[in-house]
Structures are given as structure tokens and as C-alpha cells.
Length: 258
Image (cartoon, rainbow, N blue to C red):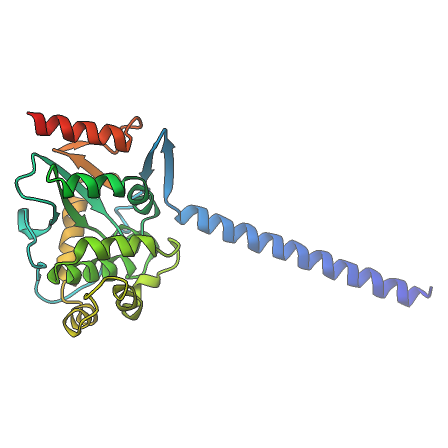
């Protein structure tokens, strides 16, 4: 083998080694960015306990202009709560959630059958507060746009069904797919009778965007640590790592006995 050929092969090997190092470094940076942006979830027994590392300095609550238009039937202070269940229920669950939040989706997956059963039986009333924490931390408008669409579904009397569909089709946290109104309207097709001209106009016009922003401001003012925040009659049960659907059912049953 000539000296020239040996030099050529050595140079090629060096180039390949340098390329591999560059690829390793790029992958390391990518993983660090994903980890730094992720929701932190902690699993406790049968309960799903999630904590979002909230960054209040970055969370601006979304950009919006125009009047604050609450969805039909909204209740509570400043009409920021979307109620599900009977007003006369003796137990009230308050849920602060973000449709882009993986921990919120995990909570829904674990507790949804129980929540449906208790609300349908008239034993529990849920007040949903929609926030934009992930938009503030990662950028984008998916949290706000999904919340607006959910408020539009509330106008149509189909909030709970669409709420469930959004979580069943939640994109990865770093994928701002819900920022696309066309995607939200497509998902509305999974709820019977929701994808109407009135709903589409409400979504596309961002009718409730300012209301969502105001809800997020209330979340920040309350200084909650992350989403979901779940309160049963004012007590934060989400921080209880022994909480399970069965335990929640018992607490609600006890409230209804009193």
C-alpha cells in the first residue's frame, strides 16, 4: 500500500470519527433540551401523581386581545369554572388542568371512570379550570387553543365528551399540535353533534381566548405548584401519594353521608 493510500484511509477514518462525535454531541444536546422541557411525573401506588415544574417567570398566560367571553354555564368567581355534574352534589372536585400537560392526561386516564361514575350518580360535582402552563413554559398556543375549543364545546353542551377526546388524542408535550384549529375541529368530529358551523366559528375566531388567559392568570395568582391541581372540597388531594380512585370514591361517599 502506498503512503498516499494510507494517508487517504487515515484521513477518512478521522473524518468518520469526527462526524460520530458531532452526532453524539447533537444527540446529547437534544436529550438535554427534551428533559429540561419535560413534565415531571411521580407514580404513587395506584394513584397517578404528577408535578409540572412551573416557571412563573416565563409563563405569560398566552397572548390574547378582545373582551372576556365566558362559555355558557360557566360558574364561580369571574365565571372561570366549567361545571360537570349536578349543582346539588355534596362533594366538589376542583381541577386546574392544561390540555398539553402529560400529567393531566395521566390523571384523566387513571381517574376518569371514577369521576364519570360519581358525577353521573349525582354525588360529585367537578369544576374545571383551564390554564396555559405548557404554552408559557415551552412556547406555542396549543394549551390556549385547546382550552378555547373546550369552552366552545361547553357552549354546545358537550364539554365533558370533548374534554375526554382531547386527552385521548393528546400530542407529545413538545408537539404543539393543538395550536392548529383545524386539528381541534377534526377531533370535534369524534363527539356526536359537536362539529357544527357555530362550533367551528367559535374555535376559529378564538371566542374564549381572553377568558382562557384570565383563567390562567387566576391559576398563577393562586400560586399553585403545577398541573393538575386537584382539590376535593378545598383540600389538595393530588399531593396525597396514597390517593387512589377507590380512596377518592370513599371520600366522596363519606361527604354524601354527612
